Image (cartoon, rainbow, N blue to C red; front, top):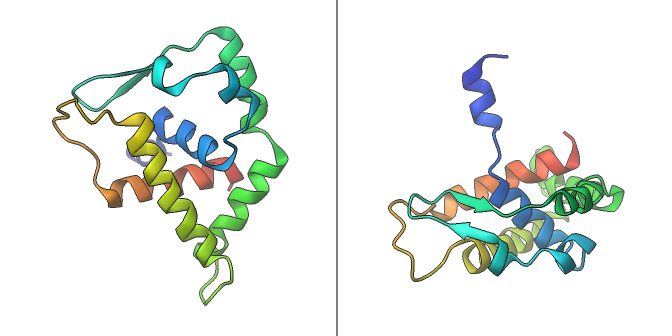
Length: 136
């Protein structure tokens, strides 16, 4: 696979954490990891995380949670089929909740971001993380 294809597949850690938080807000990882305190925002729009080894160890099982993977796959069902699907409403609700969570926890209102992501970029990243989480 060429490096240009790898860049297309790259998923920002902010979007990955936001997807997991949107799908599993009561996960063990989020009881210990405080989004408002352990995410450092910078003006360029790139986030830095204060992750300790214990945080990474508690995040790993959440990412491999079978119910999380199945639910991510169910949300992707309308995109995988070429017709109307009953799960389309679920996907729309997920995207709305993801966008809300991303803007609330990963974008600081009083920061002057030079290039904040558009709604389309946020939705595209949300769908990319669903593919990643589902294992497709």
